[in-house]
Image (cartoon, rainbow, N blue to C red; front, top):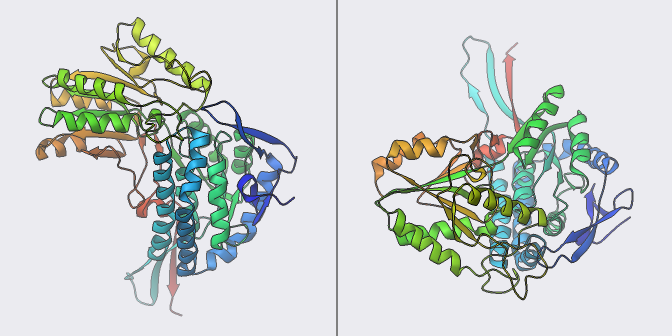
Length: 483
C-alpha cells in the first residue's frame, strides 16, 4: 500500500506500509506525547527489501561512477534545500536543539556530496609483470548487497554515512534506523528518492532490531553489515557473521578522555570542552567522558567549567536560546541518577547539576541538568562505563606519563582529545593514545572527508574519507596470459 514518504517504509522504490500493517508511536522526549505512528515491519519486510536490493545490484554496479556521483550530488542538494524542515523534525524526535539538528542535517548532505566525488576515484592499478606474456591488473569491485543499522542519537548522519559510501561504491543497501527516531531519516529517504536512485538501490525498513538483523545476517545475498550501536551487540554480530564470513563495519561504544596540559588558555579550553561535552546532552559516541586536567591549572579550570555549565539553558529544544533539551528516554534519566548516586556514595563531589530540573516546563519529558563532578574515586562506574549523558567528571594529573596511562586505561578506543600548545608534547601524546580519532585542540573532529572509527572494543572499519568507501569494495586481481 502506497503511503506518504514522510511516514513510510521504502522498499523497491516505493513508499509503503509494513506487510503486517503494524505501527509504532514515535515519542517526543520533551513532552512524552506521540509525534507520529510509523510502520513497524518484521522479517517479511526485511526479506522484501533484500530482494529489491539484490535485483538492483547488477545495473547499479555497472553504472559508471560519474552517473552515480551525479545522483548522490542531487541528493545532497535536496537535503540542503529541506534542511530547516528536516532539522525541526529531528529536534522533535531526538530532543537536541534545532541549531544542532541543522548542523547534523548539513553534515549528512556533505556525506553524499563527498562520496559522490570519491566514487570517481576508486582506482585500480596495473602491476608490471614478473614474466613475459602476461598482464596483471588489480581492480576494486562492489562488495554487493549491504545492510545497515543505526542508533537514534544522530538519526540522519549515521545512516547517511553508510548509504552514501555504499551507493558510491556501486553497492545496494537496506537501512534500518532506530524506532526512537525514524522521522528525519524518512524525510532524507524522500530526498534520495527524488534524486533519482533507481528502485531497490536504497531501501529503508523499521522493525525489531534482533529480528531484522537476524534476516540480514542469515541471508547469503547480504555480503556486508554496517552497525552503529553498543559494543555488546557488535560482538554478537561478529559471532553471527562467522557462519558466512560476512564483512562487517562496527562503530561501537566509547569513553573518550580529554587531556588538558598547563600551557593552554584555560578560559578558552573550558568554553570548548563544556560546549562539546553537553552537545546533544552528551549523547554522542565521541563525546568526552573523562577530563584529565594538569594539577597546576585544575582549580582555575574547575571554576570556569562550573560557571559555564550552570549557565547552560535547559528547555524546549524548539526554542531559540536552548542549549540542552531532554534525554531520549526515561531509562536514560534513571541511568544518569544511578551513575551520579554511585559516584556520590563513593565520595565524589557534585559541583553542578546532579539531578533533573524542577519547575514549570519540566513536569513531563526526560530531563537532566548538565552535571560536573570531581573526586570520583577508582571503582566508581563513571570511571569505567560508557556515560552517554550530560555527566562531566574531572580528574587531576601530574605528569605526561600519568595522563597517557589514565587515558588509555579503558577497553574503548573511539576518540580522545588533547589540549596543548607544545608541539613536541602534542606529537608524543597523540602517538601514544590508542584511539581511532584524536582531536588536538579540536573537540569536533568528525567530517565527511576524514576516516571515522575506533580501536579496541570501539569497533572495526572506518566511515568517511577514502577509507569509508573502501569498506564497501572487494579487491580483485586479474592475471592475463597473452596467448
